Image 1 (cartoon, one colour):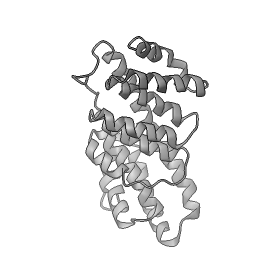
Image 2: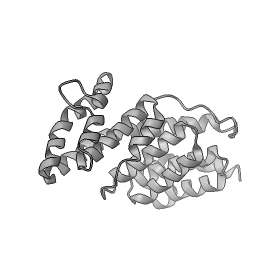
Image 3: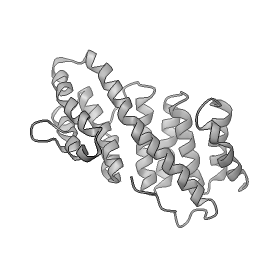
Image 4: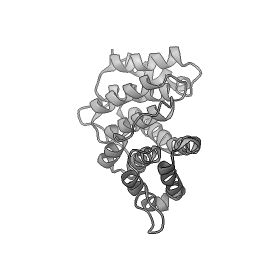
Length: 222
């Protein structure tokens, strides 16, 4: 994934720390979503209808390719013998596997730095009711906007992701990202609120263990 450059209108004194935090956070989420989708899909296959079962059977090879960086183009487009995620999403539209294929496509395009394609496919994903997968996909849209330097749109999606599933994994993760883009927008009050929520409501999370620095940074700007 490409490194994010400093917003010319953003705060210069804290930009290095901001983008270092942001890069680590985005790398973490993009790597983690692949495993979570695989687990989710394995569970859903037990409940698929006959037509959707064909899609489920077709998607397994694309999943294997998605786990190997050098084969991700085949994961997206297929290899001539097995369908890629794009064909599955199109040919088996309105199935659960097609929905998951859209999530995969968004995540893979994000890793390639193709942010507009990432947004396009991630926005096609329909919520499943999963308290983990749904906010992860919403948060990936935020990542794509953040990497595109559209921090206002990124903040909207990070807030949605944080609100969508209240758990100690996704909620503090996206609150942290929300705080970071608020910093880029020089909304230090909003950033303080996001960081303080992590500290007070999710003290056992990984983000809470490292939130004192960012919290102090924005409080010094108030």
